[in-house]
Amino acid sequence: MNIKIKKGLQFSGIFLSVLMVNSAPLQAMESHSEPANPQFRTIEQPLSTKMAVTAGGLALIGLELWWFLLSKPKAKKATLNQDTQELEILVDGGYQPNRITVQSGKKVRLNFIRKDPSHCLDKVLFPDFNIAEDLPLNQTTTIEFIPEKSGEYTFSCGMNMVRGVLEVQPQ
Image 1 (cartoon, rainbow, N blue to C red):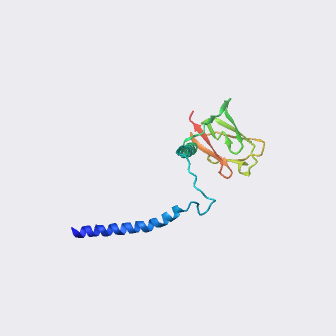
Image 2: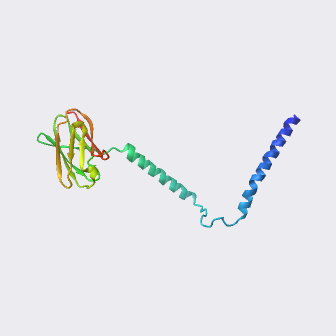
Image 3: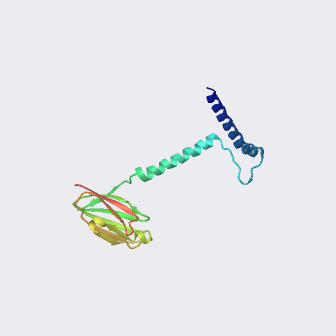
């Protein structure tokens, strides 16, 4: 029993000496009234401000996650003129609309109007239909084809950086 008490006292003594040695610089720092570098000072903010900034940051993170992961662009359905499904696509920083819905087995006519002078957008590719067309600036380029199978097919610029989706639905 005496051995346990002696070991406990030794441990307490070591702990207190370490604590006193480590707290000495802290007390010395607290005694200075001015910070070492006057350019940087701590400014205490009210708790309500801290909570508002945190809530705003979390809201922005949630908005970004929704925008990039959960939002799905609305598809624009091609209009049926006689036996041809037709849609106009504006090429200006991207494809507008970038999601197109058509029916399978019917002729599709897509009219691309390029307004963006970027070289990336001077060509449109439909790899699943073996179509590659140049898009001259400020002109309408018409692409016609007949999608036979339903599904989703991507189209893109020549560099594959700007993309769109052609959704082919069964009749």
